Length: 273
Image 1: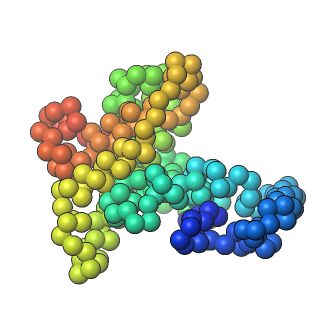
Image 2: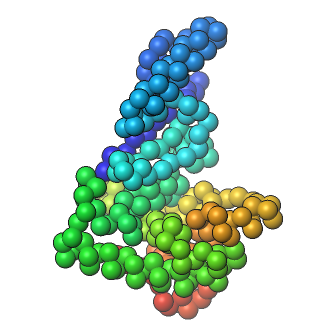
Image 3: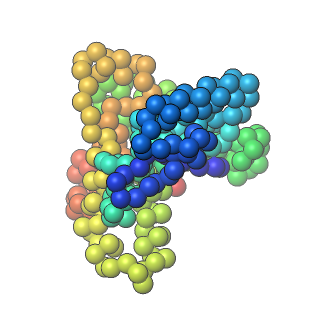
């Protein structure tokens, strides 16, 4: 699986990536009109390449404003666009906990699509897998998806789609992505333990990790969108994406001291891994 992170924004103190590299023409701070000409030219050429070659991913468009990441099934690739690589989702000087809780979870969520209900049945080159391991993995994931559906069906605006495959894929990616990001964060702390203070490996740090994840889901919708989300949109509402992932996380319960059997730490959890 490949991960493509595309960004082109600059700040006053440090250049993240030269715009000239993105547009293949010299971009200058003191010449707006020439810059606009080159950018339009680059976009036109990029559009032609995209139309002529189906495998060619567009590198221009509205990259500097696009806040998105997605998994391309047919390419087995993840695309991370520049709007994610800046505050409030990413701070260069932010803590490891906040980075892995926010951007780390977003990337992990997309990675999990590669081994979801459909993805687990295919190899890196998208060839069908028929081995015993593949079938067992598929069975475990399916059982976990059904478990999540029974859990999420009681959430508002979710009952009509909780058992749909596309919604199950998203629920799995949310839950497993959070676990993957947390474990990666902890492994990184352990690997560089000599260079990391004890503060970074504490309950307070764990709370920051989960808080950062929850903050990525901050949002408010009008009644029209809420009704639409009940059927059209595969994701459950942001509030329940957070709650659903937390109630299945033992690490969250430990970090916040949730008693066993409480609403945020139920005895029965959905977990395939």
